[in-house]
Image (cartoon, rainbow, N blue to C red; front, side):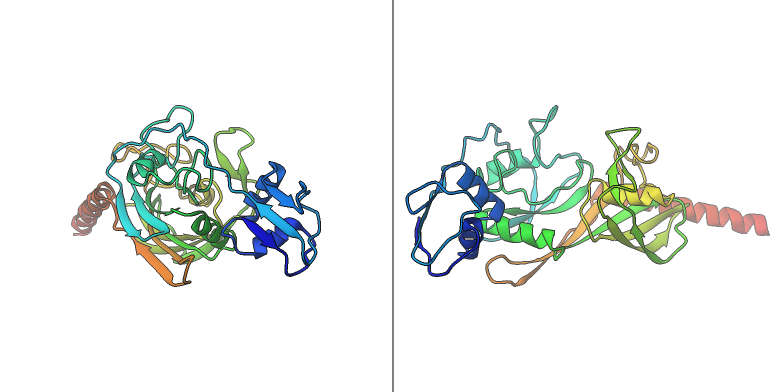
Length: 309
């Protein structure tokens, strides 16, 4: 791709990003550092200035071979078009391969469903823009093109994407609504956990109390930031860990993982700016938990009434 500069720019990466090539600025820097960007025939630094009439050539290398096996898996598609897809990830499925789980991940399934994804957004995470914990179910948006990946990633960075979750927490949450503002970083006593720590990254979580079921509370949650384990850490920090969360709370025999479902995802389409609103119903196993707690609540209320006679 050859471009003749029509404007001056302080940096070559700024100039190329402004040309709206569908490439992130970080990716442009990477290409430049690897010699895929030339300025007037020579290899520039990303900090080199661009002047009117300068000739810039940029080469997009072929994607590297992805060493991940495509797998047929039952992944529900909620929305799809030419540049993106929104999927409903089941609990128990990791977003991408890692040590100990090279198979059975969302990436394995995506490569089976969309063979052209390799190279979008990175080698080991083709098309993946954001993530959900392995045991969190719900909506994830996946990019099919580099332009969509860049655009939606920027929306996440600017906090324009609205994510809503349904959580079941232990105990009776007193406030009807609130904001948890606590910086999150690695737990100093257990590096596998996250915690609210003074020198952590800013983390904001809004919540709305929905209903109480047998000493548990159903909560609608809207994280304003996207820190690792954010909802789980924040709810535990105010004394209400998620139901079944054995990392930040206690195990529960009724559910082998924590109760958290990403039920709503709203963002703007990378091509036309149209608002995309995707939604997902609560999985059947989580509905069963609510039904069981509803029955237990009814039994307890009946017992109280009898004692009052």
